[in-house]
Length: 347
Image (cartoon, rainbow, N blue to C red; front, side, top):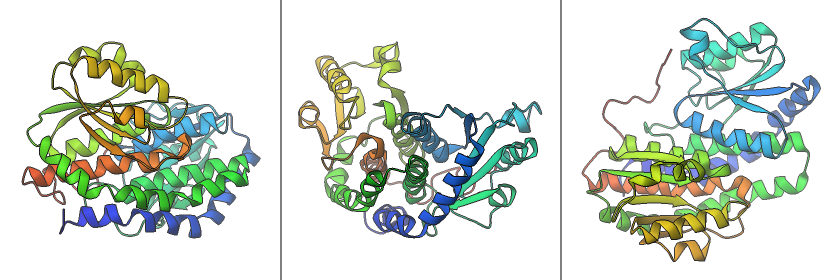
């Protein structure tokens, strides 16, 4: 895996997390205070691409830890249909690594026009998005040159977790966040093992990626990485939705990537793994749970003791490494995926 910018940026993630924890807390506390003052009845998160997968994590995080109703925005209602939803009683959280996507900027601007409190979460505090929002939370990920988002994605997850914890005011949760760089460093030790495993799947044409709860967004992000880097048809599902029809796809040898964290979803996902094994699926397990790992043809063992609500910062990393390994096994350039640019300006 040597020689690619993407690998370098994957390996920079522990340092990037540490930098955000050290430099970003003051701004996060300020935004949390502003959100408490406004007592908004609804949090609307607007994003695209990897940032939208971070937003899916935010739905569970702010809903589960802060008891806020959370909605994912539909930017085209503003940009294409010119029929924006009512946002005057909401807070709008806009996530964009570059801060340049016109539809995300337009939605945030509309929220501010209606009187909503607006917050930009971006790696560029001088970006157009930061310019239209009341508050800006910088990701402090450092320059990300590779097209595929890695360190900006995990720093987006951490920034959301920091904001949730700041709103909650639980100092014990801050201590958990401070352990994330070490957990991620430990996970990166899987890199040689993942590279070897990638050779097994170099001729795969399709797969599904399945998880649930806080890791629902992880399934989407890993699937996205497999699509954009290895050109693999990878479909993400909640395990609940997967059982409602798409499970019919599974036959002998069909690849299923299953993310099984420790927590409320463990038992249900282990049960699904057993059923998939009985159907002779080609199981790839990303998990700290020994029972789950033992059911798979390929398994990546995560650090134990990571609380489910922060596990997405860790669980996505083997998926990043697998997408990188598959790209290189296929002779593809992971730094230059076909048809893609670093900044995507959708409207």
